[in-house]
Amino acid sequence: MHNPGTATPERFPAQDRFADGAQFIAGRLTKGTSGRHHAVVDPATGEEVYTYELAGTDDVDAAVAAAREAFPAWAAATPGERSDALHRFAAVLAERAEDFARAESLQCGKPLKLTREFDVPGTIDNTAFFAGAARHLQGQSAGEYSGDHTSYIRREPIGVVGSIAPWNYPLQMAAWKILPAIAAGNTIVLKPAELTPLTSLLFAQAATDAGIPDGVINIVTGTGKEAGEHLVGHPDVVMTSFTGSTAVGKRVAEVATATVKRLHLELGGKAPFVVFDDADLEAAAHGAVAGALINTGQDCTAATRAYVQRPLYEAFVERTAALMETVRLGDPFAPGTDLGPLISHVQRDRVAAFVDRARAYARVVTGGEAPQGDLGKGAYYRPTLVADAAQDSEIVQSEIFGPVLVVLPFDSDDEGIRLANDTPYGLAASAWSANVYRANRATREIKAGCVWVNDHIPIISEMPHGGYKASGFGKDMSAYSFEEYTQVKHVMFDNTAVAEKDWHRTVFGDR
Image 1 (cartoon, helix red, strand yellow):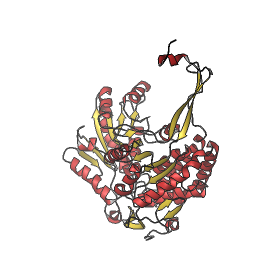
Image 2 (cartoon, rainbow, N blue to C red):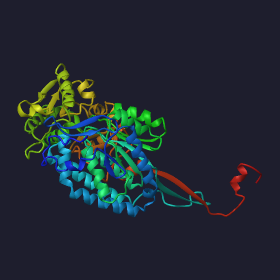
Image 3 (cartoon, rainbow, N blue to C red):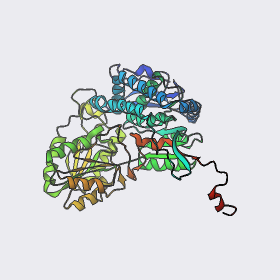
Image 4 (cartoon, rainbow, N blue to C red):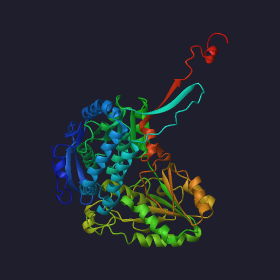
C-alpha cells in the first residue's frame, strides 16, 4: 500500500521516490511485511502525507542478511576507496539539498530555514568529514615496547551494526549513525522512528546513487517494540547505537547485553544555562531564546534550565520573556516562520501538561498555551518561560522536550555549579561570563559531555557529541566516534628468533 497523502509537490518534491515502500534493503525500496500500516503526518496541519507498510521481523532479518553479505567486500575496501565513495555521497546530498530540506520540514514541522541552514548542510558537512576521516584511522605508533618485540595497533571494522535513531533530527541522526560505521568499514541496518522515516530513506537512496554498494546501508522502518527489539537482539548484529530517551535506552541496553553486543547510548538531557553576574545580559538572553527554542525545544541539548545569578535575575527574566514574545509561529514553509509545531499533538499535550502542573508552584511569565485559529489544527505551542520553580520540582528535573525554559536564581558561584549538576542528566551545558577564570571553572566542574562558553547549541563535525551520567555513553561525530565502530587489535612480533626465551623459565624449566 502506498498513499501519497495530501502534500503538494512544492512541499514534498521527492514523494515519487517512496512509491515502492519504506524499507530499504540491499539497495532497493520494498514494502514492509508486518501487515500493519503507518502514516507520516504533517504536524503543522495534522494531515497524512504518506502511508506505508511497517517492517516486521522478517524485514529485519532480510536487512541484517544483506548487511552481513555486503560486509566482507566493504571491510576489505581500502580506506581510500571508502573515502572516495563518501566524497561522491556528499556531492549527491548537496545536489539534492532542497529535497532533503523540504522532506525534513514536512515530516517534523521544522521551519524550512532551519532545515536549509542547519539540518541539511550539517549532514553534508558530516559526510564530507567522514570521507576524510576514513583515511585516518589512528592507533599508537609501532615500537619495541618490550625490547624484544615490535608492537602495533590495527583498527578493524567490527561487522554489522544495528542502530536506532529518533524523530527529532531524523536526517542528522541517520548520518551520525551511518557515517562513522561505514567509514570504518562496517555495514549497517538503521531503524528510524516510524513517525519520520522520509529523510533516512532519501539518505540511503543517495548513498546507493553515489556508488556505495548494495547492502552497506539498510533501513527498516517499523515500531520499536517489534522491529527495534528484533534488530537489537539479532545474533548477527555485533553493535547497537541508540539515540532516544533514557527510559527506552535502558531497555535497549537490556536487550543488547543479553547477546554481549557493543553498545553506544545517547540519551536524554536537561541542559543547564548558567549565567554569572558579569555576563553580557543581551547576549545571554538572545542565547537562551535560541538555545531553548531550536527545533521547538525538541533537542536533548536544548537550554532547559537557566540559572541566573541574583543581580541579573529579574532583568534576564524580563528580557528573555520579551524576546520570546517576538518569535513568530507559523507554517514551516513560510519565509517568516521562526517556530514550527511539535512533532505531534500527543507531544504538544504532554508539554502543555508539564506547564499546567507547574502553575501550582511556579510563575508562567509568557506563553503556556497553544495558539488558536489556523494554527490550532497543528501541534503548536507558544514559547514559554517559567520562573521561580523549586530546584526539586518536576519542571526543573524532568525532560520536557518542548519550547519551555525554566529560570531559577542563584547566589554564589558554588551554588550555581551545584544546581547545574543537580539532575540525573549530563549531555550539554553552557556558562555565560566575561571572566575567563569563572568560565574555565564551569567547564571543569559541570558534568556534561559538552560545555559551551557564551553560546549554546552549535555543533561541528570535528568534535564529539555524547554524555555523562543518565545521558549515556559513547560519542557521535568526530574521529572519536571510531572508538565506537572499530575493533582495536594489538599485533606483536618477536624480534629475537630465540627458541628458548628467558620468560619461558617462569613456566617450566630452570634458568
